[in-house]
Image (cartoon, rainbow, N blue to C red; front, side, top):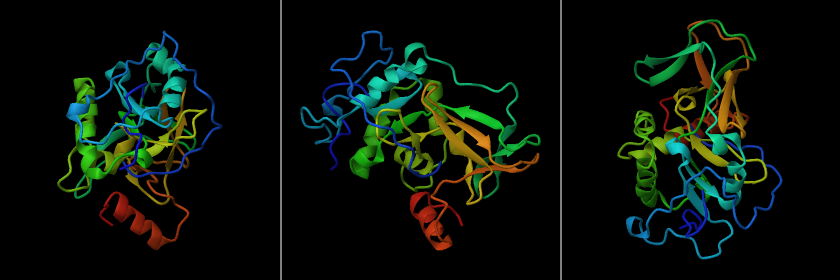
Length: 267
């Protein structure tokens, strides 16, 4: 297994994409006492064997559950950087729009999606979204071990957040929480100062369906710990809002194969 998914010390729809990486910084030996993030280590007895990192592992990851609204598995450095943000210090609210220009709609045969409720000019903010669950897939243990880990993490969230998470679609038959994560994760979460690129599961962004020619794009904002979504072209009322869930600059066959492997889309 890959080490670093749990550690004995410290804090912590769709498919993956590479995100910008910032220069590394050095975290202090101890976080400031004013940090508002409460840290929990999942008890060893409740985990499959071998999931804790070796003592002193500098890349060890740690779970935290700020305000009961997110389950975060972060490096020690990322946890420190997050502790300096308004989100961690004072539970800064998600930026909101007075009248969101979209509605959640059922699409027979292919689940749900977001549809514009009015004409939206290019460059317009559509919504802001905070992740429910964040982790680093490159450091995660094997798939059989992940299901109980995500179960434990989600169980620590507020009931309304749990309900939102469980309402998301899973494209993987037989999987439960792991299927939801793998179907909806989007690698867009990063904290300036740490090179780690995290995958996040988002309550609203995860409802967006895929297009290789999207009409909206996400932009991550560390200060509010939110993903901002804006239009890249004019969208007419009744048109579906679509994002790119794969690397778009590939040949068609490569894009099809990536979709089939990562999210098992109906193509």
